[in-house]
Image 1 (cartoon, rainbow, N blue to C red):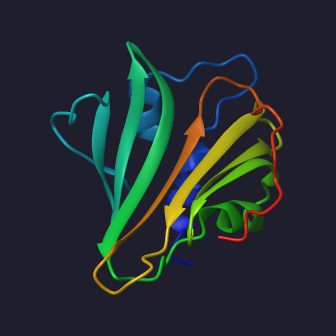
Image 2: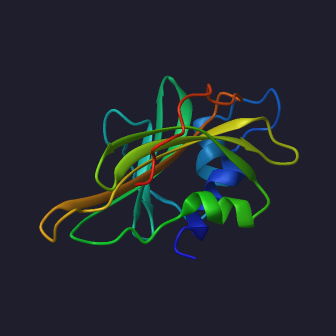
Length: 157
């Protein structure tokens, strides 16, 4: 439930086949994001969506829309990938990399009717101790491609 607004925004921004969304189109489609008057460098745009930070990455043209969260000693309250699945997207894990206890990165190949193929990347860390930082970030690439296949074993984070 907590990841629903981010899932809605990511799916709304996912481009149609052959489309490269402009910054203005992303701002309009990502309903609910409160965009800051000025972006935080190096992002093209930054803002917030509930308890998540929002950013549009790219050099000149937008390349990805992402959301992030961080908190000391907390369990991660977001699962945007499954929220996207509930909304009709098909996401297949293409690779993962375990970086440590409770920490890693996953890349998913995404498809949705009427949209170009897309890549969703999730980076997360669940704090191993009460004083450590937990973080979660999810981004959707706007290049109309799936990620390359890589290793997927041993990613029980």
